[in-house]
Length: 69
Image (cartoon, rainbow, N blue to C red; front, side, top):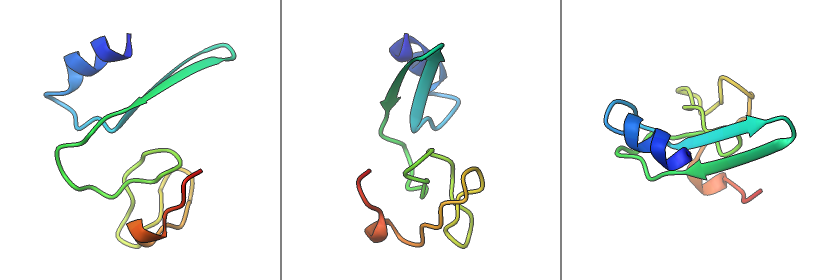
């Protein structure tokens, strides 16, 4: 199902991550983006000019400081 949604939307949106949830079940898939936008490693939202996520507030300044979770 994720592949179907990605194939339908990839031309119009720059999709980095898709997550589907149903009750307690969840599945996610990450995709290679077409441009080098810095994104939050926790939720995938675009970082602002200061390197802070607008959704979860994670303070990530540079890609080199990201840690694998």
